[in-house]
Image (tube, rainbow, N blue to C red):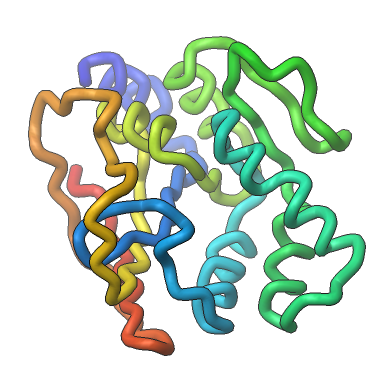
Amino acid sequence: MLFIRMFIQRNEGRPMRKVVFAINVTADGYFSHTDMIPNEEVHAYFTGILRNSSLLLYGRKTYELMVPYWPDIAGNPTETESENEFASVFDSLEMVVFSTTLKQVDGSKRRIVRANLVEEVLALKRQSGGDICVGGLTIASQLSERGVIDEYHFVVHPVIAGKGARLFETVKLQANLRFDLIGSKTLQDGIVALHYKKQV
């Protein structure tokens, strides 16, 4: 964490962009998207998060899950109103994909980065713009381990999955992460959105 503290000290007084991680999760802590309950309010909630953002950070797996699916809907809005709106906002944002295996990404607003993840994200925080929205468990785990993520949105679905991916399977935390709850909202179907801020 010394590297992070030195970075903050060098940039005191300069406003920096927030790094925000938002994801659906089952009641037993799994993150497989196939186990979640899709509804209008969930899509609207995530659209609101994207509206505050100007940049998406993905790894290869999350990129291939989201693209071309959502850009295709943005170009041909035939889904529900909330899905069409999410697709439109999603497709308007710039995107950085961290990957050593992807050869190319579609669209002029998307680029591949093969450099050090943490150093790249810290550099992006210094740039002007809206929030930086993180997608994908591997990237979120690595950035959380280094204290780079500022806020977390966990949208908890009343589902017991019993299987699937979890946070921090690819890294080992050296210390507990402590959060302050700054907001919560109950959505349709018993889904609860929890908004946390990292304690400093």
